[in-house]
Structures are given as structure tokens and as C-alpha cells.
Amino acid sequence: MKAETLRTFDKKFGVMEWQTQLVPTYGWYNHKHEAYVVGDKIDTSGPVTLNSPMGTKADPLAQIHPFKTHRAKQPYDKEQKILATPKWFEVSGAISIGTRRSRGYGCRETQVPGNTALLKPAW
Image 1 (cartoon, one colour):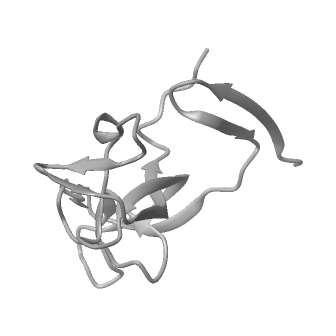
Image 2 (cartoon, helix red, strand yellow; image 1 turned 180 degrees about the horizontal axis):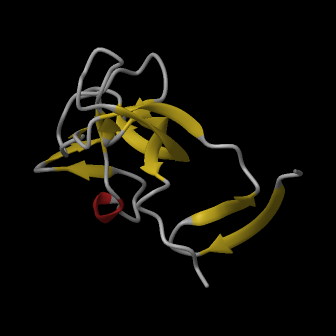
């Protein structure tokens, strides 16, 4: 199986890559998630996982599930270490976070695992 990639551009989201024939990531899942809430501090040492599936091998309710992971880069406030959301962008280049403005921002890789059992085919 060979993965195929389609690159598209959307003025709201930028460059997007769509891939087919990908091998999913497998993990333990007990139908609960650890969600990122706007304003939560992030760990800037690696990718930030949003909406993490929960479960371990020791959990009697957990089963192995396939996940397709959506990866992106998202702006964050370097001072407060919180992710920004698109509605906070301003033309001046500053990102407003709540009532506070910060010009010290960067981009952080984010990933969102999606349970393939919950995804519906496009056809």
C-alpha cells in the first residue's frame, strides 16, 4: 500500500496535506479523553496533544483502538505558555489572549488523535 498525498490551500487554514492509505496508530482506549481547555498551560518541550485518549493495558475497560492523528502547527503565547485560537489573531501581528496582549509568540506542533471507528467515510 502506497500513501498518496494531496496538498491544498485554504485562505482560512493555510496549506493542508490530505493523505490516504495511512497506517493508523494503535493505543489503549477506555472511551474517555483528557481534553485541552483554552487557557491551560502547555509543555513546550514537544508536540502538544489535544483531546488525548485515555486508557492503559491495566484498565479493564480499555481496548486497543486505531487512531488517525491530525497534526498541525498552532500559535502560542511564549510568556504565558498557552495556545491561541484563530479568533484572537489581529492584523497588527499581535495575538490577544483574553484581555492581555503579547507580542512574544511562536508556533507549537499540535496533534489530535481521532478514533477511526468514529470516522465516517466521505462517500
